Amino acid sequence: MGPDEITPQLFPNRFADAVGPSAGGPARDRCQCVGHSVATRPETVSFHGDRQDTEAAGWQHLLALIDEAVADGRTVFKPFVDLSAPERRQIVTLPSAIARLAAVKHLVLYGTNLVRIPPEIGAMTSLEVFEPYTSHRLHWYPYELTRCARLADSTVSTRVLYGNFKFRPPFPKLRPVTGVGEADFAALDPGVWGADAVRTCSICDGPVQGELHQVWISRPVGTDVLPFLVNACSAACVATLPEPHPGYFPTPHTGGPDIVQPAARQ
Picture (tube, rainbow, N blue to C red):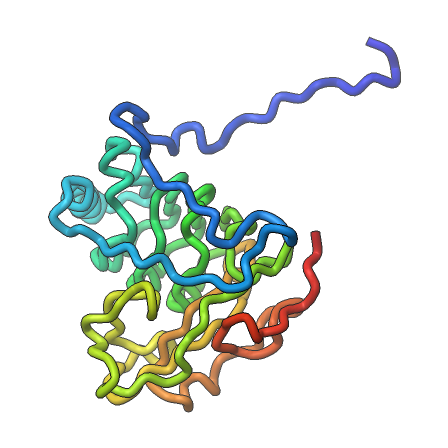
């Protein structure tokens, strides 16, 4: 090898042990909601409207795995490794029971079919490493994730995120205020509100009763800047939100095509 030639390097696949069995069909659905470049980004986007089938075998298996993790106090939790491919495809959100995973420091959600994560993730206060890498249908995260004060490292497929700096896809349009007479907060359409229920405020953790205030905000968590959906009980709570991360839309906002984001940084 000559002096000007580059020595080949072999990089290990650190997610090699995060992939479950492949037999039985596809483990996830394809998604091109946000496009993949400035040229392919859409004018408008919508939440995934998938509803979780709580009778599905994959859901029941996941609940059992959470029970096991709680019982043995494990610090690393990568449940999708233990699910079959058809079971993994059945999971579009995580159970609220993840709030019981108080000992987990490292959560691996590699290559899942998830379309949303429940606010109960905020109760995982020991969480230090969060890896939903290649879960390409996760375009946003619940603001409650910011409660995980120890979270220092993350691996997220940022190109699939709403408002990502690489090509600035849009955010779904939110209703700024929804009165209790306009919707049943315990039975929502996830394709409209991003959840099938909103019970507590993302900010103060109090009950959401008379009104639901929804806004987007982009904030750093771990080693990534994520688009967070805030479900607030009042305008007063929204007013207490911190400033968005520099280089992103400068205030909390309600999304939609009229929001002018900073230029993309490809």
